Length: 116
Image (cartoon, rainbow, N blue to C red; front, side, top):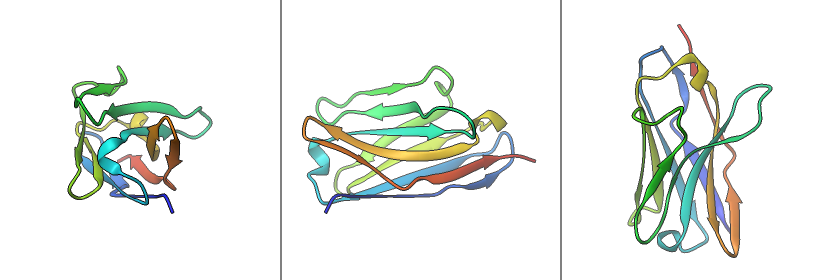
């Protein structure tokens, strides 16, 4: 079955960095666009970054441009989110999403807390 497993979340100080990973199974990863979303307490889920399959392209929320980088390794069925210069307002549960015409799958989420 389709499965997305996120990892890499944790507690980090402001200005720090984390790398999130999302490993996929149960579908053709290389033919699927992947996205990272986040949901902070009391707020709606928002799109953070996306990466297409072919041609390869990326997009970012204005709030993370220049600080976050999304990438993918099709050989490992994994999408990454490198997060640098983290701010307290980046605190949220981060979700991986796989999307194409016949698929809309979500991971269980990984918590990122940015605090002193």
